Length: 463
Image 1 (spheres, one colour):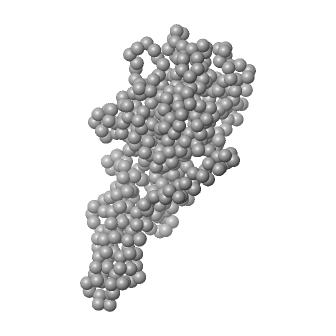
Image 2: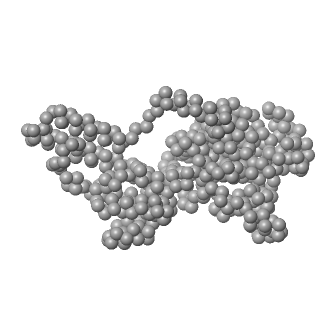
Image 3: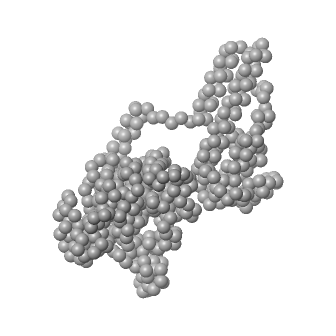
């Protein structure tokens, strides 16, 4: 606005509720294990003038300063920021007293929305005061001020729309780049059944399911290593294994050294050399919070994507997650749909591991309708892959006859990967894989006529 005179001061509109919301947001940030990631993710969302209390605004500025300087956002570093500027900081106001982290994303959204409304209210009041009491204030000036006010507010809200012309141009450019080999619709993971349809596609919720001990977690970790070795950042959330257990598995399947030997430190010298020379620069990040609350996990995923640029997220596993609905079926359906929406919002691939219901017949072959607890899981998923290892169920079980006569294949150290849903195209059938129990590693084979890998087998892929 052109005029500088203000009849209403923003400080006069500071309410107790606003200040409490601001402190609740800052307490949630500073008490969270992923405080740095959340700060980086929200620094362009929560504005300094969303705060009504100067100390709260200053605290948020110090949080951002820590994150942008590569420091962890915590009480100690924020206090150090205050000391640098010779400022006093009432640290006791931001100490968590009730032990709950709060929904940081919800608090941030509410804080920003209230800030926009408050500023809009003040500006409108100024215009109305001029209209009523300023004889020199013309209608042209009033209209101009209102239009500018509307433009500023619209800019703050930041609506996101895409015109067909722009979308059409982007699709053509992507097609040209893909034809020239410069672009892939998704991230290649090294498994032909997935890579043949473009890899792990952005904006996709992918379900990997199977019965107990059939290797669904190992397969998902194989995908993680496959894309990470191509330089794509991956985030892993597990409620079933510790991060050291996950790390040992990844080290084993990426080096080919027996995982039990690594855990017991019972390795031959050449194995020690292989493990010691493993690539420690893989862009794989492990969640430390280990919460089953889907609200917390969604917030942590956003923070991890913002902080590390993760393009693939693995969650192990669906049936351990919880939401606020009372009925378990409603919980599972809500969780699946929220993760589907999140994958599209952030334009990432979310690989969600899921158990299958215990089947009542004797055939252990996995089926899409057996996704545990809710049909909404399959509805929400963009793609569903089932992992099946018959030898886990006894020597009498064989592979099913599907697109090929898999029943003739020796089941020893093999696995069948089945694509049962693909929203973006054809189902692409199945792929037979080799499986190394010592390293829990899935790999591609050229032949399945013998029980052991052949010399010609492509054992080095996908890693």
